Image 1 (cartoon, rainbow over the protein chains, first blue to last red):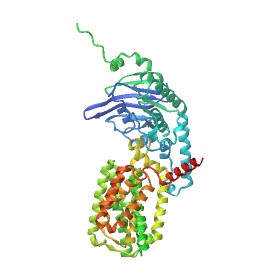
Image 2 (cartoon, chains in turn yellow, blue; image 1 turned 60 degrees about the horizontal axis):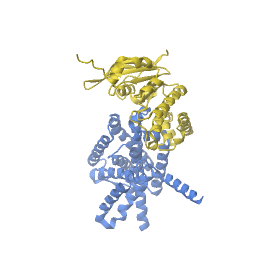
Image 3 (spheres, rainbow over the protein chains, first blue to last red; image 1 turned 135 degrees about the vertical axis):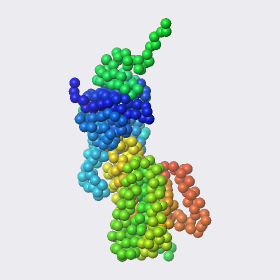
Image 4 (cartoon, rainbow over the protein chains, first blue to last red; image 1 turned 60 degrees about the vertical axis):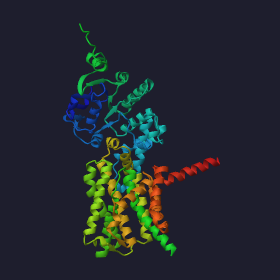
Length: 260
Length: 288
């Protein structure tokens, strides 16, 4: 097995007496897809928010390739190599699709305000390179035709893909996908699975995925972490998880022993 | 005679446009509301005014000092409020307090001659005013076209997502505030030496609201819209001057009509050049 890129140890977050995440430990292995599943309210999105620095952990540590991410600001975590998508899509609605994907690249360009004001050659060439890189990412995901449409006018499935493209434009090591198949039908979900696999092969990233479409999870994940009420319930290969009695109980409810 | 009067109004409008341009960058492009930008105009006006009045500092140097003073003042208010990630409306209130505090200071200092105001020389001639406006427009255009413009708009569209793609919210918002304050400072320095008289009541919340109204009526995320509207807003009250008491209702009616019929503002999220391009495309298509 390859080395762990993301190491989460004893992660805990308390909201006013409720343990949303309770001493959770897991790894995401380099180059793989790790699935994070569990019933609604299990604390999956909170884990994403803790990794990306939206919330500060009450206890525990998060490391990316050996570097600590614990308690760092979101933009700082992003620059350390973590990109994400959102459960309820968060695109830059009134920007074009190409501008959406160009934004993270421009945010990392190095020219300063004075080069910008005087239109220094370094500035224009950095902007051209950013547009080219963004276009290449969009082509990779098959959404390059939408480049000049406004992001808010796209169909839902394409918005999801655009969000993934924007995350990839951050040059991440780790990509967190929060329910990318939410609201999609089976055909769209299968297509998304193909997209995720292509992203994995072409961009050499590691993926941590929250998803409720269990078929997608079993199909593309090589490791699954199951949460219930903030705590770790089980982890292992997708096949094992499917057979795990505790996981089935958590999702479907325990069969009650007949009285008497 | 009439020509002279019209020219004066036009130059006054140009001076206002520079301040509106500043507010447009901050509100229209970065998405933060301010009810206190007249304070930065006031700081610019008084810095330049005091320098030329008491120490006979050359006008270009006085403008430069006004820019520095307004920029520095924006850091004083911006660093604590923007770092605290106050929501946009809280920031608007904080800066409003700053503006009112400044007015009280100006009214009570001896160097500013208190509430009686300062009588200055009319140093900002047409060349200065028009030149400064063109330079400010070129400056704003380059900045907004650059990566900083892209970062401003990302922050306006979705601060959470912007932070998640690696944009430092505090630094981006602060940069936008400083740039807008510096433009307001230039506007103030020119205003002081255009009207040849300044007093503290010229830089209160009423003026801040008018700057913000120009940006909203002109359209968020547009440079040309607010600039055009600020020309109308400066000229209209003058043209309606002989209607005297109907002046203010007319102004209010205009604002209400814009809100009803064009809630996105005159040029919401577009530029006049986009429309001209569109018109050209439309015409050539017809010919074919």
